[in-house]
Length: 138
Image 1 (spheres, rainbow, N blue to C red):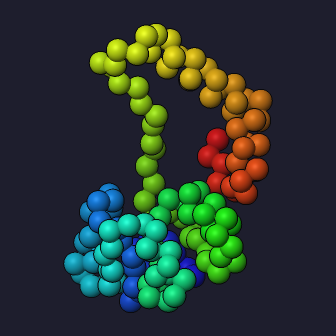
Image 2: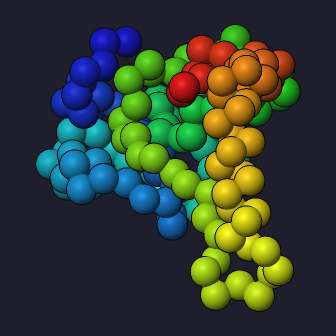
């Protein structure tokens, strides 16, 4: 499938999940009739609809979805678009108002350990272990 813009999805049935964040461009494409959107309440329902041909594509978190496909034995039945429909940085957060003792030091140790894991290759090894090295972002 050729995919460079949302217009390339013209005529498809695209799954969407209530409560998830989609771009304004996504909803504008729906309103413009570029594709039909089938809205459900849980991402888990999307995969079943996809596997049974009730939708043609669905924007889901790539790593979680591909790992689930390997675990569920259906990885060979689906494909993913290498260019995401949406991409955002997500961060692990620590609550400033927390009463957890030493929280600031914990956040610093967390950052330091993550940097070490990136540098020594252990983070990449975790991605490889779960078959996700192609999605390794660092």
